[in-house]
Image (cartoon, rainbow, N blue to C red; front, side):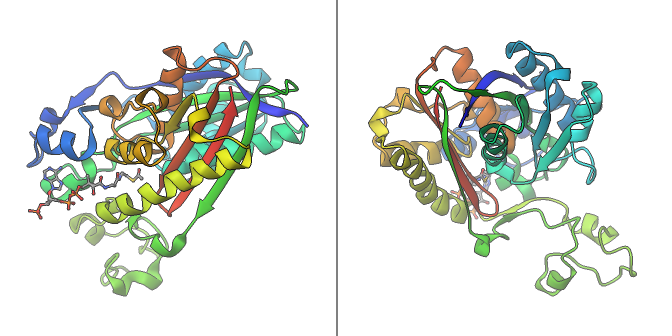
Length: 348
Ligand code: ACO
């Protein structure tokens, strides 16, 4: 059975840099608070008009496709991971298919938030292993800047997130010393509301619990109402400490699951590329697994948390910096809203 290799990888981040100090014009915060709690120093925000989740994904895809030495017409399946799609529907995958004038191939959107890219990778891997497809485009892209509360009320969430995209092309290899060894996916819906954006949505049965106020909405207008805007119910909600506590347990667990499945231990890792949720979470994971600094890649300092885009952006930068060579053992790991968490172990 063939394994998947990453034949090409590319990234795209908007040129607009917003430092922590820049955010102080919108909310009561400080560089010290943000750096100490999250490690983030700056993030990129998309152009208000020209750049969308799909357009950033498309730019990243162009680079990945070129680096794979193929053309968009060679791609035979698209998987697009995002929580911030251009449209509520259809998904971003078809916008990529249209923009790059691809054949009438399948286009699948994955809605798994921070673990979206690793989930998407696992889906693509199954098609490669079964021989169904030969060139699969997997994209993670986010435009958070359009959906955050930049007032002091939303500062615990809005200082964390940034915009950007990255993409890979998966191809089959018969080389026994290379490829994606295994993927591991998990979820626990008991905490679904701890990190969530409730509206617009169809959760009318929850409204008495205060997630939304439909009192004045006539039938047919419950999906989105004036009061949702007035009461700031169209922004993400997060219990940061609860997320932190769960993340520092589940990250090491799912990384160890990937290593044990393939008879490796943490010291064998050339590089761990964790989802860039929070530098303190990454440091905690590094400490738990007794990894050296050079075994863990972090770039949250420059991009913030870009959810589905964060793992592939970090992977792309690590590869561009020469930190990953053919045959190296590389682990990707993510944890996020749902909760969902996942890992993928490569012989690069
Ligand atoms: N600037 C200044 N003060 C702030 C800010 C801010 N941006 N945000 C919150 N505060 C204040 C609060 O109002 C509070 O003030 P008070 O004590 O007067 O009430 C104080 O800082 C502490 O607030 P907490 O929310 O308790 O701060 P905490 O130490 O938990 O840090 C943080 C918040 C950074 C979100 C932390 O909980 C965390 O890292 N959680 C992990 C969640 C995470 O990483 N999420 C990323 C997205 S999910 C994912 O990708 C997995």
